[in-house]
Length: 175
Image (tube, rainbow, N blue to C red; front, side, top):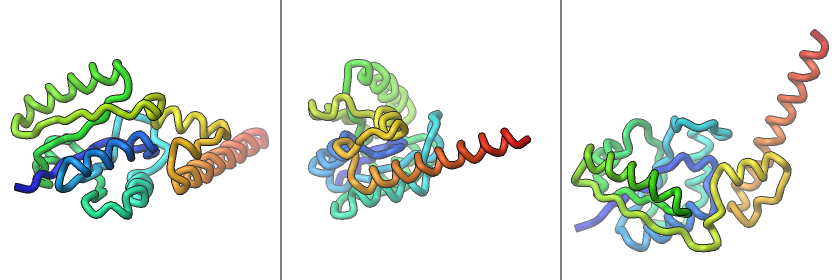
């Protein structure tokens, strides 16, 4: 029997911690679907399409990893794609509590779908998309935290945001 797993997240942006968890999960399961959630309750800097493209590029050379977007409940997405497992990553102790509660809720909704949590490698414990975004927004070097294509996308996005803020300020001064 082939086992399919889903690794869901907002991936805004994807970083080396996410990539490590996905690659390790891809060794454990026959197929891994990296599922990019379209509308998390977070402030996003990349659109769903941009996030999917960045994630897909990160896994372009992995034959048993596919990347897709989704909306709605993760367990319903798992059912639609025939996945038996949800993969989650744990970085720090505080992650455990929220992941534990989410796993219990998902089990209540879909007891046939298992949740597997992989503990991050030590070198990635500090990494979060929020940390990467904040460093990149302040012009910091994120090259050790994200793949080169993601670092370029972040630089581009924050330059665009800076230009639009500058233009808005100029416009408001004229009014």
